[in-house]
Length: 141
Image (cartoon, rainbow, N blue to C red; front, side, top):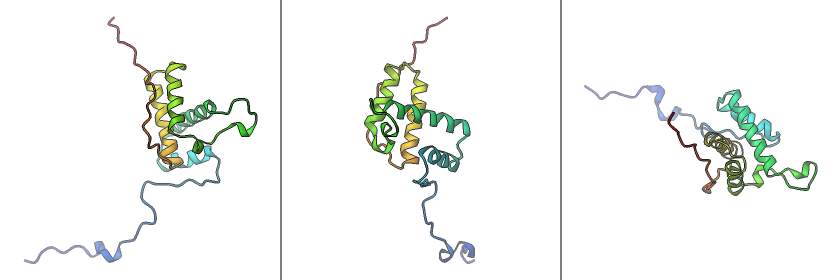
């Protein structure tokens, strides 16, 4: 008996080359940041509620790093100009001054990691050593 042959439709000569890796989308840089986030969220099939929550964390992050004493559009900084140090400062602020729960701080962290990794395509390579929100001690009833 002869060895089984590969079907003809799997021959190497008929394979098509991919133009971009799967699972990557480069949003239109001419769009406002909000629409870029929306475009990437739709591409990865995130729910609309997740999109709303992540966008709110991005807005809070940008408000935290707004230039003090400057009015108008020049007061805002683009996230591309900020980096891991800014994310660390914001998450530390949430845990200390904001006194948020650990799950809330984790959601903010995931929203910012999504923004930098998927939308801006500038992954945060530096380790984020923010002060972590502590979970409350469980007191037996």
